[in-house]
Length: 395
Image 1 (cartoon, rainbow, N blue to C red):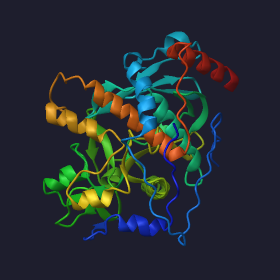
Image 2: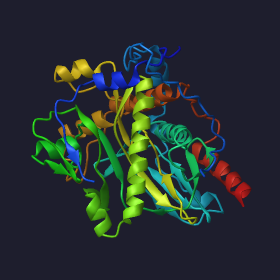
Image 3: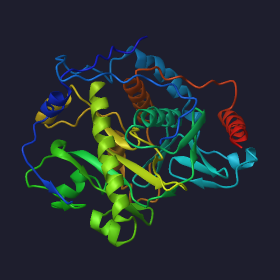
Image 4: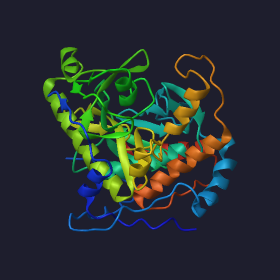
């Protein structure tokens, strides 16, 4: 069955502003690599003279969803939760296990395998069918579309779950950009605002904001790592602690804001709101700054359905989301995900729903069908073979 038609909205800036006219103001402190083996998709053109409404995209009552759910549910027991390429690919030296990605040292390159592990609250919650492939391919689409804003570290894409990247010295700061007052984690803007914080990461916020309200302008709320959890930090602290030079911080923050503004425009053009996201950057051996890790995925970002946002906001309802927020909320209502040593298992219906939402986002953003992986060859064997061949060709 075909996905619902996604026609581009027309008065883009006006539509974005009309989703929720801000009632308050605030102030704040002061040669790219070619991606190989990845299909380029044309961006929709945006004109301020066009007048069509926002495209109507639906998460429910979708024939395509029923079609995919069968494959999703049958794959729950076969998720790619662990990889051991250091044992199967001779060119790889060592492995670092991240929350979602397994990162292997390939000499001059890093081999990043995106698994199906689902993280939140700084820990693993579950494994989601096809999630790794969705994240990898979503990132690659955005990496390709944002090369006019910043170069990225991608060298090649030998497998649906794998990206080979140039090595970079990673800045120990995550650049979190936000357009709305929302969230449920300890560092989310709504959580800290609701506790009375009015200056967050150098941004002065007024009284009277409500959850899920659109800010008058996007803000940057950087974080750094400490004991495996995110710690909010101000721009001045970043420089004072020697985490980045002032010049590097200024350049990276400019790119982060530009990436987010571009992402918001493209998302709205496809009937979605890019609510907030995080970016990571590093400096290559050539001294150039590169965008690394992932970009605008449902793991690193919040997305809402645009056409229903205004009505739901006015009625005090949570927006329709296409990210892991509903899974976060389930865990928060059933345990203390920060302190409980053992967490309950995520219900199968929630796991399946999240898998569908991730695929839905990929298909909606890219205007393409998600290609289910073949089942003839075990996933780990396929990845090992493709990575070995790719590294040989790069030598």
